[in-house]
Image (tube, rainbow, N blue to C red; front, side, top):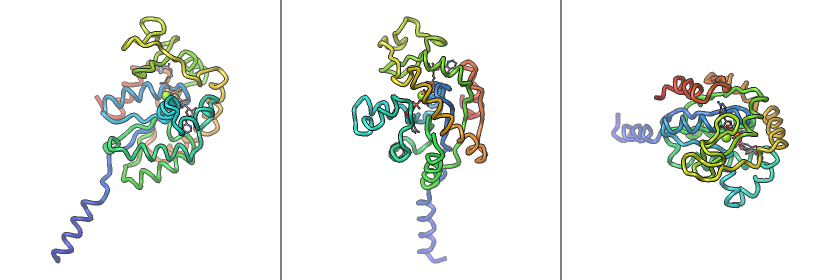
Length: 236
Ligand code: AP5
Ligand code: MG
């Protein structure tokens, strides 16, 4: 084989995108525990936790154009448009910390988003994502969302009904006053559940067909759920 051809093959091999760690996707209704579990699993795996809700809220706090655009829909409990969200995720996944895997929490949330993500993952040479659905009944998520309190500094999440902080209204880790999310009001919770039922629940069937879909009982204690996830994903 001519030297030039050998060089060309070596060059092609070097440039070919290698399959990366499979991305993880956490599906589940509002309040299913996606964020709680994602934080734990990502810290064990050392991969970034990409929550589209967290990115939007951070933008809303900083009053960026994206944040200003998204805030009204979020506060009402409606979804932000697919175009805006897909562009935001494309941008986030371009960052170098995503090269060795990442976990998506709250994305995709519509069939159009799932299709856009599929195309993006293929374009970037990622393997087929592992999809985990946290299954929780609506009566439970309503209680969870109404009782949720968040530390604005370290983002630790508490629940006045299930997992209260040691001191009322104060973060155990850094002593900051805890806050309630604007969309954890009763009316917004109702809208979020309607949006979930109409637009996000169909993704369960979509990903079941993909073959790497796992359903987990999200009504267990958080530590039990983490244990199941750790066994499934083979993490310590
Ligand atoms: P987002 O921030 O993603 O909110 P969500 O999907 O409604 O989910 P939550 O964050 O409320 O719940 P979670 O499953 O993370 O539960 P958590 O672990 O906190 O999105 C917000 C908004 O942004 C959307 O409504 C939309 O407007 C917009 N948006 C975001 N992504 C979008 C997208 N892709 N497309 C379009 N728009 C988008 O737990 C909840 C509570 O329960 C906590 O208090 C926790 O302590 C407690 N808890 C957790 N696990 C347990 C357990 N096992 N037992 C008892 N209590 C528990
Ligand atoms: Mg969340």
